[in-house]
Image (cartoon, rainbow, N blue to C red; front, side, top):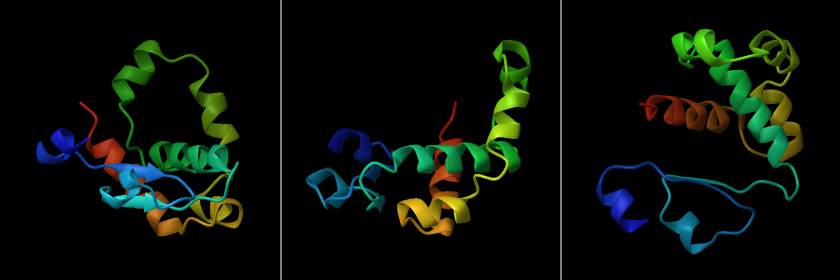
Length: 103
């Protein structure tokens, strides 16, 4: 982990506890236990609706993307906040960090 940080990696830790990994992370998301799926769905919402995904890759390799897009339409960061206790702005920032790190 230290080597990854030294090379410029952004670490995002999703854990209710402030662990050693969380202390070394750029983002610590102290999520309510058992609400990880809501966070993932909100991240997917951001990636799709802010068009932060690789469209060429999806067109070539994905099956069911339109169904996924429809499924997560209402699963906004604001929706996830009520479940996870992670601020909507933090959900958006971390989704963008992941998108920007994509090859």
